[in-house]
Length: 356
Image (tube, rainbow, N blue to C red; front, side, top):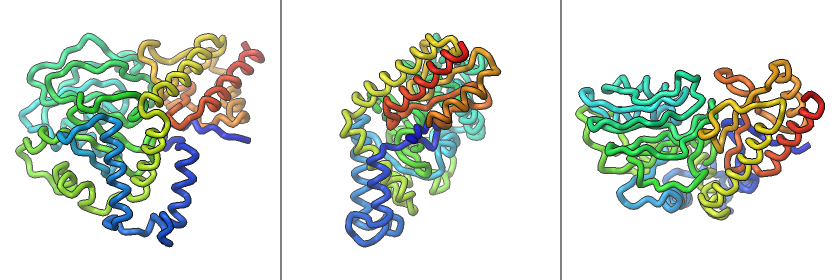
């Protein structure tokens, strides 16, 4: 039976990417060596990381003012690394608190300077994106989380800010057209739309760096990695290679415009069913619904276990909602086919016929 993986991450990857990556593990480009054992300083891997960087630049419309880095540590390391590199102790960074990951970033930033939360949706368990707020002139930077994986909300607009915008885009990077030049720094764990876990993409405007007074450890200094083209230490070779293949797949399928068309089609299909089905209801404000992580609840709590079983029996796996929200969460990242969403919709309709 075909299985559709709705996991929030590590998440589904394109089938062609998996096949090519598997071959590279056995024999990388006919070298007789596994990708897992080639030198990160070899010409073969240099070509990989250079293509990955070029693809990021093309998709995000980046010029030479920006550096593209492939780092370890996950997005969680960027919670402190951004503040460490950008914020002095006597300066203030402004944060929008729209979920668990934003609140974790706030906690880490407080170790390095002043933090002001200028917008929050915590009052309603992060079920909406706050509006009507302004970024004060004294802000060193503004930090936002573009998509909230746990709660299923997403920015469908970008705030106006004279200060650089720092954005955690871990769960919606490369899902829609984006002019990267609107941001001072973007970071994203790979394991949603880019590749396997183990590598983190960082895009940073170079002129916002080098302005803090503190001494930075070499490994935690963005300038270190910029100077060494992400090769200061041994990088996560396999995740970078798979990310390169995924970026190649995105470009071959219409680029970010093509991804947006596909993702909107999938999201509309699923949200329309949630709104029409007598057994379910959405968990977030409609205007802020995520195109990546669809959260919904059973109208009768007793239905949850039965529906979870029905979905699993139909091959729709990993749809359990996070404990902070409950209910269900269907993560429909770039590589999720329309057929997968249709399979879940069919289960929902069948469940309603039997129970609604």
